Image 1: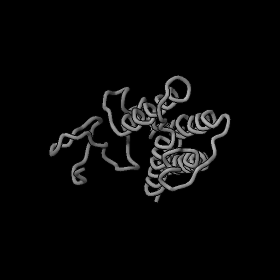
Image 2 (image 1 turned 30 degrees about the vertical axis):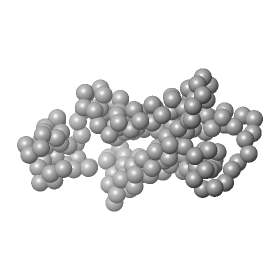
Image 3 (image 1 turned 45 degrees about the horizontal axis):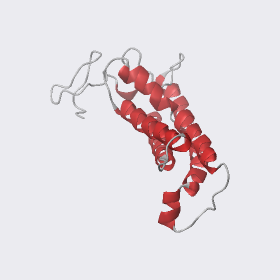
Image 4 (image 1 turned 60 degrees about the vertical axis):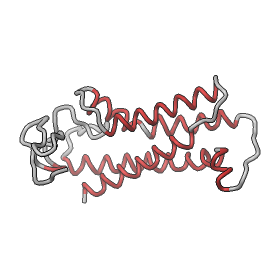
Length: 179
């Protein structure tokens, strides 16, 4: 928020706005104890190598999520209505949506959940990872309920595209950090 301000201790707050600051050293400097970049461990690597590994992981998760999101979008009644096409319903269509969206929400979204647990909830500082996790998991579990127990529209396409966009953003961020 205020780049001219630097932190020299863990959990330091900005004197201008009160926001928690990152320790001195910037993106390649020291991190608070337990910080793991969204669920990725350092495993003895330097920061540049670590960020390269994270970029590769986000890239892989992004491409898998993209490939799975295409049929999720195509099978969504809302998307079909908006773009004026229809896919004839077929047996097992809702189960297919459930499986595809489950891979996207659970596998592709895993770094966000792990980051929320390890970096935010554990130390009591809720942030973006917590918000993302809450949004995706709430939509996912609601959609699972609509698939198996209640009669209502699902949010599979919404959570799939949310995870997809967030993965793309984190992948680009890690590439920018590496340089």
